[in-house]
Length: 387
View 1 (cartoon, rainbow, N blue to C red):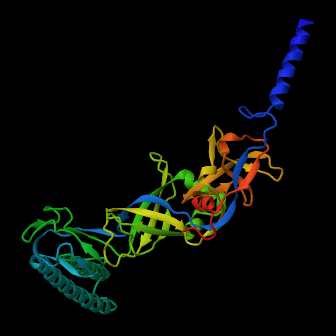
View 2: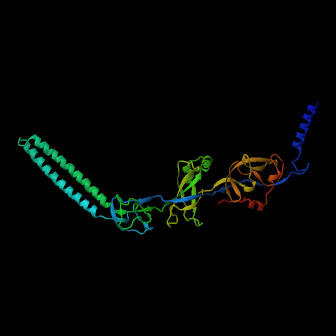
View 3: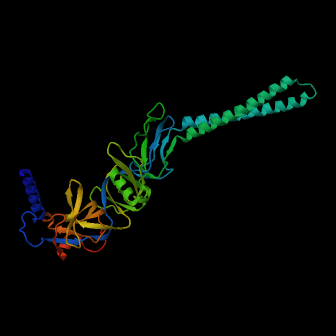
């Protein structure tokens, strides 16, 4: 009997708790007033910022390919150079002499070939009358073949000598800006001498900026759009903020995205391409990269103050047609002003509580009050396209 009474007592207490008004609210009190706003769908182009590093598309280290003394430096250090422009002249004398010697050897080999041809032709014609033995004719033929081979070898030596002579004139292989000359006039460079780069030329227009994006951001974009990374990249526009805080005047585009994640940082490298007519972007320098969609897209937005957090993630409280409160978990994207872009969970048109969130709970009946114009303005709920 005692246990039965205890069970009935517990049931009565639970019923009283379930039917009683929220803690701190008197029985029979009117529903609490909360301020609500409708979820709007806007044309938005959120901006994402990253730290980027400027890189030359092409960078060429000028190396002496023959050993010689530097005779002339024909450029202004730090200046702009053109493709094919003469930059260094090395001592030509030994290589000019080697070319002339190779040409002379070729002439001698060609003369020997002519003699071998005449000898073979003469002995071959006499051999038909048995005046010249077949062995002699065979020897003549071997001499002619050897002479032909000597000519080919001599021609190759001439080509090699000409190439080595050409190496004494070092020209720029690209348009770009050249750095400091590593060696001055009179230094021995090349094999057996100083073997480092004489100078470096970097391409500065156009130019690249590389920045890193978290792998989770890329995966989220792939899941949301169901497009390839190349397709997504083609819809994005890049802008830069220079180290002095001023915006860079030229817009850029993503050139390509790396094919793997850096395991040390969990990021993927992205390369953007920019024109650089004024040379404001210097290879090795750091800039701020701002990424946004080239064309705005329609997305639901929610006021920042409406978003709450719990152990399951982020959520908002909605008021339905029956004035009952419901909880809706959402996936939040970028923040634009006083609003979050909603990636998932809301579609637009829902009434979300923006004031009074802390005094209500899901399932409770409330008295919804539309936000004033000032409150809406403070929450960014104005019509138009967000930048």
